[in-house]
Image (cartoon, rainbow, N blue to C red; front, top):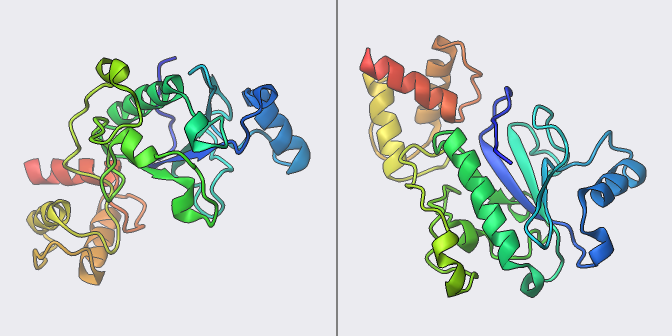
Length: 236
């Protein structure tokens, strides 16, 4: 399959596991049955399901918001890998996850971040080392070139290398060089800030003011559309 970005805004990708290692559960149709008949959802909650053999199955249409991370579904894409026990996830699954996330990352110009369900839930999901698989930094940006990989050496050549984005998703409390870059661009756009590398209340207010000036959703989250608008204003 080839990933095509949906029309709705997306800034985060969430990774899940299915909490089952049983072969008869290794199919998106089983997930759909659970979610529709047990939870009364309109469809399966995930957009993609990765089987033990690495097959990527499509679930809920990408144009629809997932039902996978309660309270954190808007602006996201949900991917689930079949499995319950960390040691039983397969190389084929990891390779498919890397390829899929690489396509997503490329489609959004490196402006999305990747997260485990556990980051917004009390569940220990996914149970496999997703950060190492995708080479995630502290903000969820991915180089897709893991430094500590659960894959064996014979699959190393299959791992695509994508440059780490210099403009990751940023929000309140973010810190570091990307925030300094953001603050400099905001200042050039007329929203003068102290460039301290800390995404605090003053930076939040400046981001929201800039978003309103560009007819963007003024949520204070710096995602692909905000970065694009900042670059356009800076180049003018």
